[in-house]
Length: 325
Image (cartoon, rainbow, N blue to C red; front, side, top):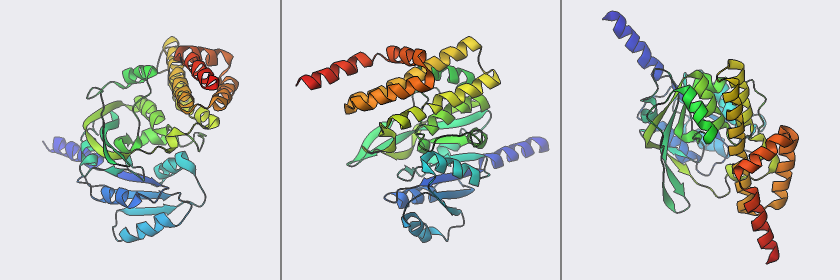
């Protein structure tokens, strides 16, 4: 009995070893974000703020809450960019679990508790549902439609048909997943670090899902994820190439499976990028993106991904229609 009790106590202590990590840049909603972190029903080890704001606004807001011993504040000496700011937080924390929280989002009071409920056994990442908020208020909910839990290898293979579910504010990561990329030369402009880590989590355990909402995610028509800069979108394919290389090194899949996985994921991200150009009507941007893609991935991969995406013909038709008006 004593041994079982000690083991249970150690597991409970490990599960409570969680940091909330806020990559701060925009001050507009930051106070609400920080207050939601402080109001969690689940006890946290610390709340770390990595300040990448070009002004002093974030620091001034933090001073209102500096009496709370859970808060740790770090001002970046120079701009780290979105990706660098997340990874800086991972270097500042020694917790077992990382709960990233974007500076314009808010955790629901029991959001962390719901996520940490799944932080046991082989779990390496937990994704919850989230409430959506736009300029007019409530904009519905983004659910998770995945099973309660799934084997990591099957999850990794399944993602070749669609990128994994992202959004940092609704995700909980085991620390070793995030720490695995700290030595990678990742571009500051990387958009989909959350999706990349969701893929890498498969090497370290199994994903789990919380079907109740855990946060409020703010929709922004000018959000960073909506950028159509060709180099930024090409850099975003690091979400594919880094997990692919890791999977190859670990012999995670058979060579044939791994080749199919890489083609599937590249096609998914190509389709996503072409959709952005199609929606914005930016033909020049699309041509530059395809040029850079061919330069980086080769003509064969570029042609295969474009053909599989099925969007180039629709794009050409739309642009020709616009020019004829």
